[in-house]
Length: 444
Ligand SMILES: [Cu+2]
Image (cartoon, rainbow, N blue to C red; front, side, top):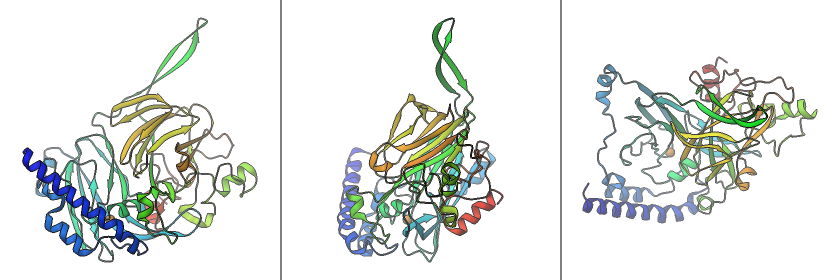
């Protein structure tokens, strides 16, 4: 693209953005209480369409795979990962009781984790049922294709695109709203998920440096730990809600978080009543700050800690899906390594700052039995939901080990050799139908 075109394109995009922001700001106050309705007027969307929207920038993109070429690429040795996403607006529970108007892919928040290896073709089909009140879109950060390429999919329609996942790492995918309009509402209401692109040559072994006494002297004790690790996924986001559970755009503009969620839940991984009873002899006495997901009648929504072993290499895929910073910290631990794909960003660090729509891989070994709490070390986030309890090595003699408690299917990548074997009980912020589907996948 020459310089003149590029300036024109930028001007057009700025103009579009100006219209979007001006409109969504005022529209939100009129339509914020309406369930699932776009906050932008049809005629405005038409105006944006007439201008060409973001498609002005790059009508075609280098990394997109034409669908009719996939078969021949497979014959030449490429692998294809098929992803089926269905838009589904549904009411889901929130901490403290009540429900909010969630927008989801496949009836769950976060959306299913996509797992591929660097060099794979990801072929994604988005279906928007005719029952949806608004179009939806998709933007996969693991791809490198024109932002305008995957436009809004109208109710009753579906659309497919494919790309080669060239860069390893963790990447957000999210609804792109109605050609970018109302994208904030759709993403912050639940239409987000994670794509993990494993490095083609695998993850690197973990180097842990400790000290030991040798011949009366303190010396370095370097240990090389196998790259083979047990895995979790933790996705952070915010809810901005009105009192009746609708999206509150004004609150979003002011960054007034209603709740901070991890894998869709505020305090979704804290001890529940059963564990409180085992530890304190009283189901109502909590060993942590809150116990909002307490009652067994809450089924897949009941909270529970994440149980881990000591001395085992854990790989935690962390993604900040929201629009507030994430100061990722594990109380009582030092993060052994931070990487993106195979590129090491830090070693032996106390906290790692992850901006909005950014991810990182945390390698951690819990050395001693105990309770460790992964937090967003922004106090507003901790006390509004971003506290995730890891229990290492059964210090309370609860008799639970990794995978024994209700399946943290949302916290563990569901497929692959590094998954933690799961029991049949499901833990997810998802519809009953989706919980049943996941239960079937894990043998329930
Ligand atoms: Cu959407």
